[in-house]
Image 1: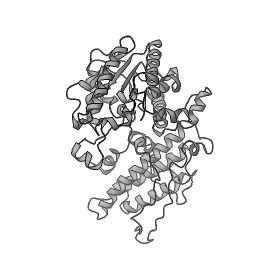
Image 2: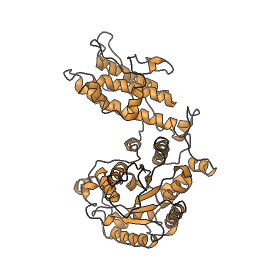
Image 3: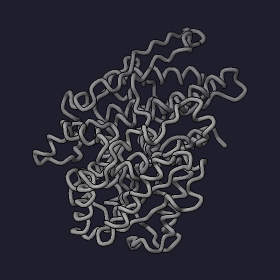
Image 4: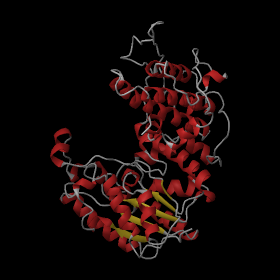
Length: 451
């Protein structure tokens, strides 16, 4: 496989769009790291035999780092991304027989992380000119969801819930499973939020999203913890105290704005969140050898790893497989009677009211609501938690009769396998795929008709 094709395999689609934006000849990166000149815009290089690809990679990486110091607008972050693309290309062009190849390959992986970061910055700075909701994951998922709607239109199926939903239902596998049944062309998005309770879901659907953002079906995937009114609802409390909530209460919903944000808007929405440090690289004028290769001094002070891990459909694929022996060597085992998520256990209350409100809201808009109880490992279900699960199932069966469709996957054989989980209560990508296939095969769920 040609080296450039090999390189393209690892570049996200949005990067490819940036790459082909100007693709005729190579340019020299800006030595000053300033915007506004053509030298700051990377194009597809034409490799020459006399060119040292390793030195070129370092040169473009230096330019990217320098540009990142002052990047604010989407266009500026796009230019930084193009420089990282060039750096990746040149490092990947170091021949396999070159003794610097192994080091160059490590740099490819490093530069890819920086490229993803700059893409995220371009997305953040070009998306929502809106205050934070005091939840990084909510801010990120909201921006992604509205962007998804701009590209794809509103989803047919919207998955909501807590972290168990974010990594517990794979939208692509669900879409594929439904297509296999003849329901092709359905759009599925996972708008799960870490820490989401019934109150948070009610807020998302009834306050945060406008009518034009609502789906044709709501798939609420979670478990008993999200409906326990006795526990402290920290996520919801943070949201209602947030600047974003105050803006929403004034009647202004989040929406995309084109162009550059006002000065300070990015910083105000996520103060001190990201910071590139200066980069210093010295090279010999004769050999162009880089003397300080141990540190490409571009660093990210705090990178939102979760935000980067979430895919284009709001889903967080996790590869880790739960092994109780290894897991409890590093973590303490917490019994159900000491678990804060089950403290002062109460079904009904504020969470019950939020559930009923969502059900009534969906019914009034003729949006089918399906609530799914996700599986748990046997390791997690000790006597206390098992008893609460029984109460929860009975409660949901009783109130679901005329309000929503209840699906209990916690009792489906085979879905509680340890290798389907990241930890005792959160599914991994294998489990998320298995759950999606199980749901897609359910003939009693009133899925929207295919497009």
